[in-house]
Image (cartoon, rainbow, N blue to C red; front, side, top):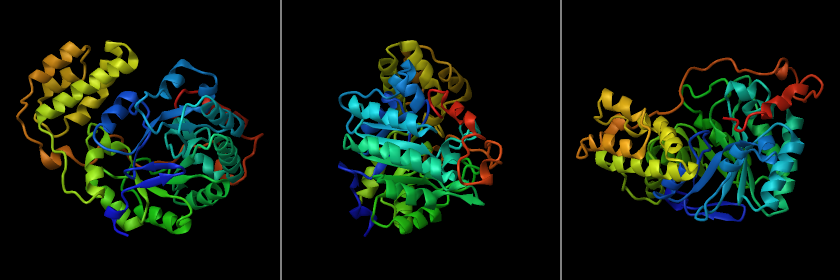
Length: 385
């Protein structure tokens, strides 16, 4: 089957017109950014990762994270947690209160504040704990006929791989799909993602459930290459869309066999940035907070464009929509798309390093409740990211 034939993706009863998923990114994939991405192409747009404990405690920030507008369908929420009971309760809440059409569980986060407590990409090492969480949450999701999926990394490091064991458990539990980021916890976002691991996972899973690939997709052609070389059923886009919400349009075009790509002028980017600011104002119901949130996106949006250091600094400190408009008006709106200078790696990078894990975590694949009684501290934050 060619890539152009694989233009749809089914996850449970949900059929997507494009096999493309927006990866949850803390502080990035709020309603405003999801709205912007949806304007360019079809796919599945997932909320920021939300901690299960904060959700069932109805923390104001967690409730904002899972908020969806009427035009958002299907509604997708990603949960993070380390306790089967708490995770089950969070899924039950989403189901009973009709707050989601799809639920994803994060077992792929590599950041130290998550893994040092045994969460994220460290958790699948403990087979029994991972199994308990997945079985419990699938059972709760099934009560509302909501498909539940899992996001994985290859493992803790090259000597402690977990993804095939996790896939086996996920299939046994009844997950509707799974995503693999082709790096380990130790890799963080360094080097190149191991697409061969995605191919191995797809071979292992076969056609039992869809397998989605994640890692190093910074252009539509990368998605085509991943699907062609690994056989995966879809792609999950994270860093590649930062400052480029139009990437979803490029992906939809490419996977439908079209050569059409978005190559925005500087003026077109300025218009997108301003629209993003307006959406953030609406999301926060506060102009200052919305524009302040926009600041982190500026370097991504203007990567490669002739903006100038002084104006870049001012844009990164903008405090109102009026000020934003005045700064954007100073740009050369006729400046063309800069090509390769605007593309490539963006967002998190860094070097590989020894994973931060609980003491003795790798000694055994069975979870020791007494030795790791403090694992619940991993759920104290609102978001795992």
